[in-house]
Image (tube, rainbow, N blue to C red; front, side, top):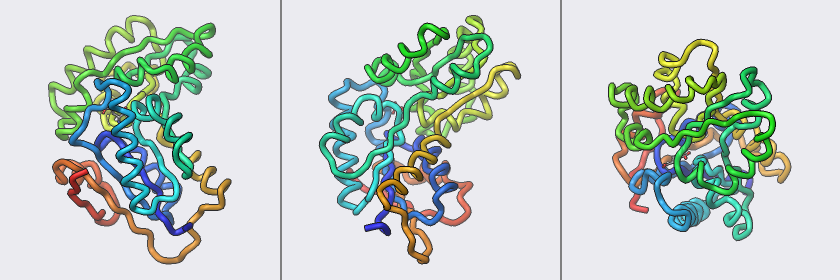
Length: 262
Ligand code: DGL
């Protein structure tokens, strides 16, 4: 069982930003990644549809023998993780916008959250925001259109830059000093964002925290892979494999990329 893979899923290629953090911390673990790009973006879909897609992804990862599942998607986490935890035996790790660290560090007491409609509308996001509502102001912005552009590999395109500028300018006018990236696709936009943001505005995402949590949960349930056999990483996409390859090009060794109709 302990040599079983860690399963990771996202609405597409974005969750690879989380997968990379997990792999950095846990190089010995086997992994299976599902990019449900055919159904991206999840962010504009009704909650029940996000839940059904999350169930489908979970069932496939369990068929592949996964011992733990990382929901590497803020939209799926905020809309489906409670159900998944109640209805399946394996441990689940989710990802939510990093409001807490941003709130604690902010000097201007004003932070921006860029996330999908599905995340910003979720009750989990509302309850987390409420906890901090007295101490800080949260400026929310739906990143409509960003996920489809990233899914086409258009990270450095002028249209992506223009859209980002449109989204962050109102936040800057409100005086944010932290920008929380509440979608796992957005870390790929950090180089562009850094060009657009003034130096005093810091960017926070949740990738490292998710990796640390994954490590802690593996230890808690005694699930660490102790085998000496070199770990295997399998990636499945139900869309164009070349896009997934583009986001994995900085990997040290070739990943196993497969098309699968799921
Ligand atoms: N990576 C997903 C997230 O974290 C993107 C959501 C979408 O597909 O709209 O929210």
